[in-house]
Length: 418
Image (cartoon, rainbow, N blue to C red; front, side):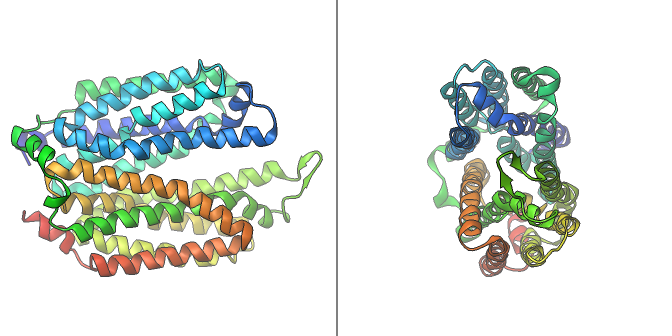
């Protein structure tokens, strides 16, 4: 690593942490009032509102997943800072425009454009992975992941209160202003050494064929996909499952759902518990992985999460589920940073962006596929089957990583010397 580059990595990390939090916060603040806004845009009928809310929500992830490898490749060629500036400026423009939408098509289109223009957190991951000293990569990426997860946690919380204070449309404008601050900070304070001509030339002419450890990289892509499927498969059934623990099943009647307010509150606590556990452990697990080996942490974390899923199917009260979800969050917190670190250690510098872009695409695919699988299994087989099936997936993932990467630090050591 260039000495000039390495001297700025901590400041870059701080700015990228701020920007990643701001952009994820702004994209998730819409979730609590999304159906209400969809109805305000002229969609009528319960089924239509639910369907269009799902389309609007998924449009962002679909676009982001499709475009991530391209942005990663362009970052390899032209630099990662320009990608951060592009993403923050693009989102600072598109998100406020959502507050001016006059129909559902405009809103969905803007959500899709935000997914295309965005990708700040993924670009920040690539910049930090490349410019952080290799022996600190796991810790730095873990800290960055904590910022992303904090945005995912606090965004919906703010989205539940801001519309009543300033209005729904003004909430979009405030979110855009928050991202604009991140744009200014990124443009002024992030420092990146100019991409060297020979590296840019390699990025144009060489790619997958020059990756020395293809099996390891493929294993990480598969692990990222599996992890997101496992994470998201539980989401569609959490509220229904909590209802069976809180004063009996949630019963629908003409006036609405009995005890729905209490059930949704507890379901929110269950979801928040996982996020809090991940925030608490991400940087610490990254630090441990830097010393002990990233593959070792990946395998142990997958095994621990797989085991913790089994008792979740047998809980008899909500607090037991909250505790188990928190522990599962602790186990999973360091996985995505470790996956990114292993990829970074096993590809040449000129291909890091593209490789991490493919990794992000696989994770977005898991975010889309997971809820579909969880909803289908929960509806057709039963709620407990979702926990058992997800546990099996994670344990299979641990065994797969054991075979493909190995229970050692060689994924780190072999590349530290190159």
